[in-house]
Image (tube, rainbow, N blue to C red; front, top):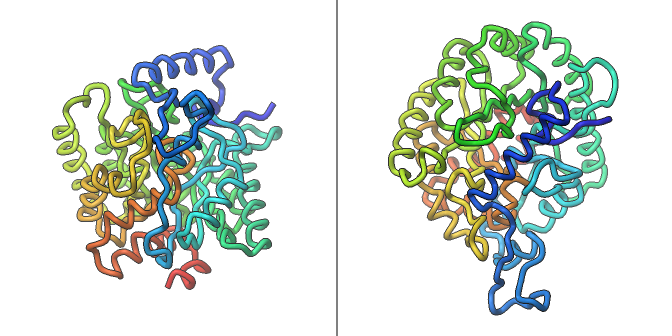
Length: 396
């Protein structure tokens, strides 16, 4: 039977009983920090369902609507997923028609998107290591259909970043070759190493310090041989581990996802200033490695402490910009616009903000930057890092 979603990402050999235990652990964590879509009071100007309560997360998001700011600014959404079914509570499904609607109706100019490792759509038979190639095949079919349709969403999945097990070492080369054969849009892989003792192990890794293993680095070398990129997803305490990898494999094209994974829960709860200083220090060290770029976004996840998940209504783009600007602008200062790119991280961030408001917030945060810097942040860097030649011409 086909396995998809984050539970499949936490170990390809994990049995259903262990998966169930991990889901139960996550549910306890979710209750503890209250990230469930609870019964939410609507604004007084909004009609409710008759009992004064919101019944869906979309209704909660729809309480705050804005027109798109600077609608002609070209955007490449550098990171999104497609989930036919929710991978894990409390996240939502995000089907092709949903992201197509976001691209077409958000009011922003979304030239293209980078489909990113969703741990879904795998092949259901054949060698286990090769089943991940099914995700590249799926994303490529989505891209073909979007291009043929020719709408404002014609750039959907213009670049594809899926998964391969780097712990196969040099043997992962065969898997990478199969990805490349499946689509010319395939640009690299993402490896989810995110793990922290204060969080349940549902973010892609079940053990720490995977990037320090020699066999992992052998796998990274196979990416380098083929000119493929490595997306990495981790929490801020793991940044020194990535620094070591970037130094050891200086030719690797490494993309740090989600603004370096800042945390505001567990041992960081109530210590926002200290957590920010630690994050900034480690990001500054990482910025000294010219082979590392950063995706800016994913700050609407609960563990960052910058989301509106527990609020009665979403933050406006102005509120979002105020809350998240220190991390975003600091990352830009450290890495430079030429190594930073904005991401939606939908549908994960969708739990706390709409597509239109998210891009409005990014535009507000960068309003004082030059036109060239903003072009790099919103489109140019992603086009260059992911070698999107066709889109680069449109972005310029």
